[in-house]
Every structure is written in structure tokens, then in C-alpha cells.
Length: 246
Ligand SMILES: [Zn+2]
Image 1: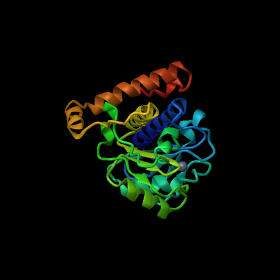
Image 2: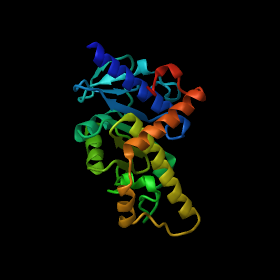
Image 3: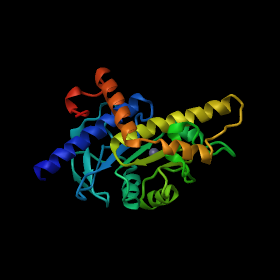
């Protein structure tokens, strides 16, 4: 591997490890779930092993896997749901990073009759095109199951998985972290309205247009990445020498 490609790979591996640890701290990941990201030049993607703890994930432990699901580099076996990431990357050339998790609040919205999770908070404008629910509740272990999930996701940025979890896709690892935080905030807001016994009032089309007019996604991702990484460094969750804020 050429030295500049190795530097890029090492930087992406630190982002994946840091985002994974931060998502554990935010109670979005726990003992399971995974963050993945593509390497440049069609070199495959980074994924953690099935066994490594999400709370202490180290960049050098990440595996490099190709788009057929073969492990190209690293020690240990990929997670049982590797196929989910492979098929998402195959189906969506426009995305760089994938999060699969078993967020409690997301799962709750796959278990309610006649309730459709929709954007409630301004930052949930990210999901204005829709948040489909995949009907198959089984764990995604095979390519055909994963391809069906990718089909349910379609062109959207989030897919709920019936009685199982959530998959988010984004343009980078920092973007994915920010999306995950906002997805949870939005699901919580919706749940709080339901728990108050009130009728949810999701953002209207006009309001979404209004929000989009002022949306500064790149700036916002940079701001929140700085916030979450700095806080994780100060809290001893992420080592300072990973140089994530350079
Ligand atoms: Zn799962």
C-alpha cells in the first residue's frame, strides 16, 4: 500500500474507532452494532471484528473487507451482519459510511401500530424523504437479506428494521455520527409527544423547505464532530494522540 494511501487509511480507521466509542457513550451502540467506511481507490472498506468491544475499539484492529465480503487485511472475523454493510455499499455508490445499531428508540417505532416516525425536530430535515421500515425482523446474515434491506432503504438515508434496529448511511464518518445523534434526538422528541398523550405534529413540507433554505450541513457536522471528539478526549473515551481534530 502506498504511503499516502496508508495515511488516509490510518486516519479513517481512527475516525471509525472514535465514532464507535462515542456512539457507545451516547448509548446508540452497545455490545453490538458497527460503523464502517470505504477506503479510497476501491480498496474495500473498514469494519471492526465481531468480538472486539465497541467501547474500547482500536484503529489497528479494524479489518479491510472487499465488496464481496472477503477479508483482505486484519486479524479476527467480521461481525455476523457483515453482509448488511457489503450490500449497502454495493447498492449506494453515493455513500461513504454506514452505521448499523440496535437503538432502543428506533426499534420502538417498528412496534407501534399506525405510527410512522417522521421529522419532528429541525435537524431531522435530513430524513425529509422518508424513514422506511424493513419488514424482515431477522438478523442480516446473508447477501439476499441484506440486498432486500438495501432495497427498502432505496434513496433514503435511514431505514428502520422491524423489531431489530436501524441502519444509517452518510457521506463520511463524522456525518454519520452527527446523523446518529440527531436521529436519536428526533425519535425521543416523537416519543415524548406520544407519551404526553398528544398527537404528534411532524414538520410540514413548508417548514422543511424553510429549514433547508438555511441548512449548513458541512459546517454543522464540523461543529458537532469537534464537540463530541473534544468531549471524548477530555473524558478519557478517545486518546488525544489520534489527532482527530487536525
Ligand atoms: Zn443487527
